[in-house]
Image (tube, rainbow, N blue to C red; front, side, top):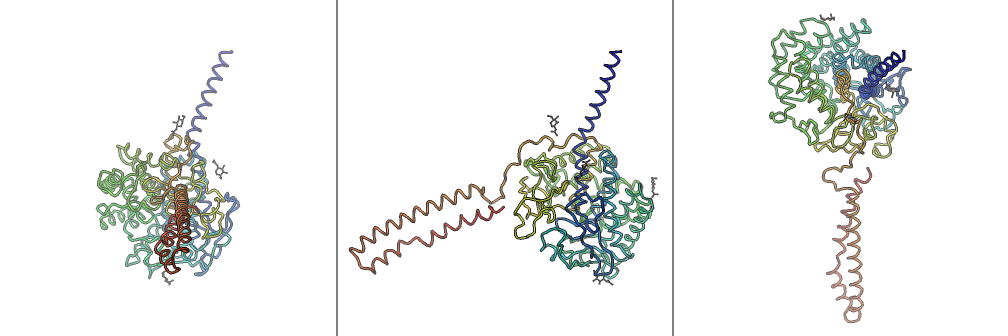
Length: 560
Ligand SMILES: *[C@@H]1O[C@H](CO)[C@@H](O)[C@H](O)[C@H]1NC(C)=O
Ligand SMILES: *[C@@H]1O[C@H](CO)[C@@H](O)[C@H](O)[C@H]1NC(C)=O
Ligand SMILES: *[C@@H]1O[C@H](CO)[C@@H](O)[C@H](O)[C@H]1NC(C)=O
Ligand SMILES: *[C@@H]1O[C@H](CO)[C@@H](O)[C@H](O)[C@H]1NC(C)=O
């Protein structure tokens, strides 16, 4: 009886420890997934629902579309401002849906399925509104020049907020094809819960794709909509046309789309084009990896292209466009100079995705894990570049609403008022340095498309039951760094003080010498001779110049 009890309690203990161990392994990534979806909630435009979790957000942008008599309320604000764009949103919805289709169980185990569906639907509801008739797609709401002069909460968003479209006379081939990809991929995730809505999305996807294809001459949307040029300019529509067709094939099983994709792939010679990093403006890498998983009928052309593409990018000795920072972050030339982590995450996403398609996967998985680990704290800054998860997390994202500030001129002043849980910032520089300054939109902005692939990667970590993220063990503070070319701020002040002291000493000594001489001269020489002697000795001009130089340099940095 006793022994039985003991065995029973032992069994219970083992079971309990097993359960808690599983929980312990996943709790960080579960929270990260939850936080990432919270960030999207913080970006919502329009009338917010009752279950809105972001207490500092209000209804906003309620007149959007009125200038064209259409309802363009809702959707997501793109970044730290209040503009809305179709292209980065469509890219984001497609990657989030792709990640969710592949690593759905990650969302299940983190209890985030409902939030995932809400997140996607908040975006697709707006895509549907932005596509009010077959050959019209609204691609932007808000004027960048007006909006970027405003720094403040969502209660004072400046007007006018014009809306911009592409249409039959002013096509946007890339935007329409990418929006088709977003509708098609989203339909597959949402079909699990709402068949009718999924069918609506598919019909928009087909109509958008036909708009993209049939409106000629083909042209990138930012050539039709000048207002987008300073923000999300595109240069090519070829990868989008293939990507849209592949997603339509996956969502409908209609081989017509598979064949369209294959034909465009050949027509645009996608596999032999200069290698570019997948980004909101270029889906070539996505085409290779998606095509490799979908199209087994058409030889191995997608798979071969994907292999070549990923290998060239992740092997720095391959003569490809990328290398690594000393800390191990993938660095792809000037493209990484802005939002470096996003580029690394996008490639990690493709590598992890591709590892499902090929047999020898270790290299791709290792690469993906290494990049994600860097993002989550295994870096020289001891910093998980996700907001709100660790004391070393970014403190000053370039985000007007979260900052609580109201003046663009004092953008760097004051603590951030609201925590943008889950948002990933742009990231460090080529030497792994990160400055965490609100005004630095290259390092510290947050945006929809920054969030797209890391969310999938987090779900991937949950599915593969990965170890805790590196920040779980970080106890050291983030080391202090200074911008290249700038001296250490404190040392700068010290040098200035020393220089001033020395100069002051020289001045006092000079005045002393002059006074002594003056006394002597006034006894023995004429006034005219005295003036001549003083003019020769006076060091006043060069000294004042030398004083002002070192003092003004450090004051520039000290305001931060
Ligand atoms: C998800 O995030 C919300 C908002 O921060 C929080 O209230 C909730 O507890 C989180 N849930 C999980 C499972 O982490
Ligand atoms: C078509 O789009 C262009 C570019 O946005 C715009 O200037 C033009 O007014 C639109 N045409 C119609 C009929 O709305
Ligand atoms: C497409 O085919 C797959 C595999 O046969 C099937 O699971 C899926 O339901 C089909 N999708 C549609 C929209 O018919
Ligand atoms: C964190 O520390 C624990 C306990 O020392 C260790 O088991 C674990 O592997 C560490 N995790 C990481 C990601 O370094």
